[in-house]
Length: 293
Image (cartoon, rainbow, N blue to C red; front, side, top):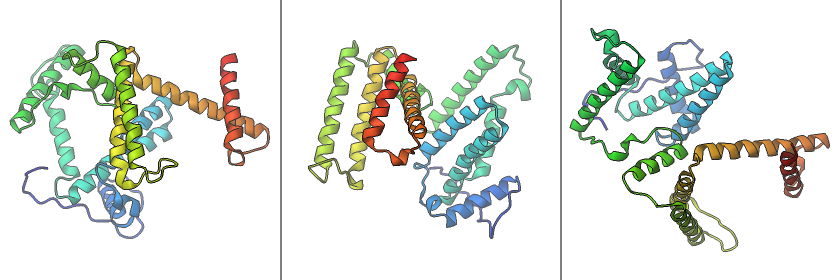
């Protein structure tokens, strides 16, 4: 938390029913109103919004690929919503507000472009990249002076959880912290699966099936995370990209489920009219269709 003593005031909620004006101040007031009156928005925290911020960034990427202006505007707005939402909550905590975020960004852009705003001359894109890295190194020295030392794994790339897991394992491997082959990674994965099963059994409220209360969910989540992290390690040792493998599975699942929906529609039925036995049979048919096509 910042030690700055200036008083931060959160934006005031807009009264009545607002109109879309295209003005940032009006958007901030609208967000303040949602935080005041919407049960879902009131319940959120900076940490609870993390998955939404990641999701919106991916959806923006898909919209840009589609090159549809309406979709792009909508997804850019959703990304902006995440920024506005976070700023509102930090302002409510008295830490900083949107103007502080904008000022910090402006300072960074000016600082990292001396070839634009100062007398420096950089001949090409590569020179710009090298100077950018030098400036970032200088910024890191300032962070360290503030008590934020850079650790060896801090260079992990930002991205999805799978991407970060694989990259942090790669960085640790370069420092000698790794299994010699895939066998050790497999054994670790199996160990983590066993620990997850044991945790589920211990924390279950019923003997017949896993029935997890909210009080137990954090321990289960940690064990599940260990399993996924270990499986990513297996992918890395096999020279496979965990993100790509997972996306391939997602697309395959969507395709097979789409086949089920199409076959039911051809029979004059909806998904809601079917049951697991019928859908499972169609799932197997979808697999056969994949092999034959």
